[in-house]
Image (cartoon, rainbow, N blue to C red; front, side, top):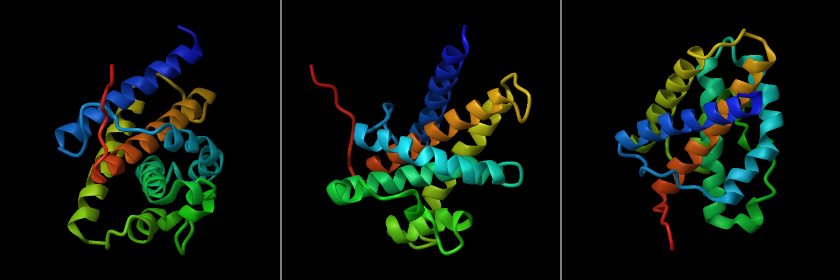
Length: 182
């Protein structure tokens, strides 16, 4: 298996595990709800996010892994509300008053509209942190040297999956579901 096949396989396995976790919590269907518009938007945000997260990952691994899920939720909300206007939102729109540090709170309150401490906010935060912890557990079972190129790519793929899971969670909350048409 070459490197690309390995990373693709890792990403697929991780996504299935996190989807299963969200489904068992009753927060997602068995198939990830997604939109190409939302999924592709990660490409605009990945580089600036990785620049922020790499500085934080050793001290705040859960936050570094979890924040992309909140970003995915925000993009799903923007997509639902007015994609024509919101498709050009830049990465800094995710920042709270404290920048990267309170990105999660800013997204929850100011973009998704869930007050801190509300049942919705707690449910979303709990599943997001649970997914981040599961992702870290899965990463730790892989064979790589910390700080290596392989570690970087594993982290990048993990963040992409978390973004997609966050978007899927928000799409489900807004009533979207995946349907196959023949």
